[in-house]
Image 1 (cartoon, each protein chain N blue to C red):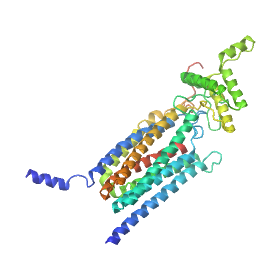
Image 2 (cartoon, rainbow over the protein chains, first blue to last red):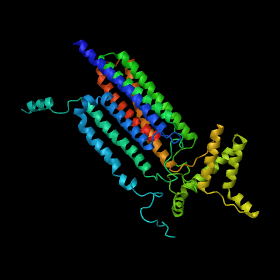
Image 3 (cartoon, chains in turn yellow, orange):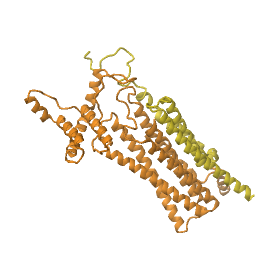
Image 4 (cartoon, chains in turn blue, cyan):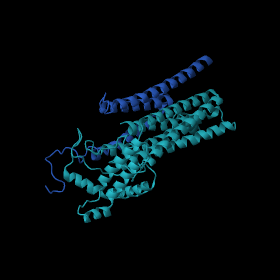
Length: 121
Length: 320
């Protein structure tokens, strides 16, 4: 029985160590993706680099949450606070997007024939 | 009967989690909303700036952010997350010496993070990359770079009108800085360039030239920004630290976001360090035992959350 208990502890330490190594490697991956997309090298496109870096950040956050924060074991008991807050957090950012981000900006190609702002020509 | 119902309810209702853990998760969700507001504001402001204009959001290089320093700090926080989870694991096993060792390492790593952050903040102060200190406008290039769109003249004029009050503040700031540089001991070539810029900014000098028959108008804020950037580039190559405000379009907005996000994150790191000091003190006076495993887990939850926030701040500020 004690051996089983110790084995379970050892397994957890191994899981923690594996996550630590994975997090370190993922940090290096995002750094290299940014380096490879530098205009001087341009080995990958900025969009690919952005996708890799964002994906890596999400995977890192999930690893920390699931293993280090024990959500793997506690998810069934705390999901009711995490899911609504995740939806609200996404909504908080998305509600302003149409007005600010998708809006026409000076310097963008006008959709209609150019009309002067000042009306002088 | 009432008593019986009460006991029955206590036995079967509620979440099967320690109250402290539920409270900590409730606290963490408020923190999620807090940092989402900051990060969301940054994303929206950044993507609200014209991407294909010659004047776009600053790159990390323009604002003196060094990618490897950010990556180093990320690694430091990951290490600290690992040691804090090991401390909790040791507490569950009742090995309090190992707990003390791991908490001590976590405290040291947290301090390293803050020292590196202080080093970065110092660089921002040295380069005067502070909210309200940066020149917002630069002259528009006659030929835009590939993929960039040339602003119509009317749009450029509108923008300059909009930026004029901030531009004049920048003009006055640079003037005072150049006066100070004139009195300092820097290489003669750089000093001559600074004096020339100051002279070109001075209307008296223009008036004197007008008397001589060759009128020259004083520089406008955009032209001052361009010249200041040229001087700063030369000073950097020569290894001279000049306290001269640069001109970076959207630089003030960037620095406000940077200091707000990293500043609040650093405050959270500091809060965590205070808790680790308290735990160490408890251990030193012999009051830390296996009964505190739950407290260590809650502290760990907070610390991992601080780590997750940095996991998103690092790529947003230093990489993409």
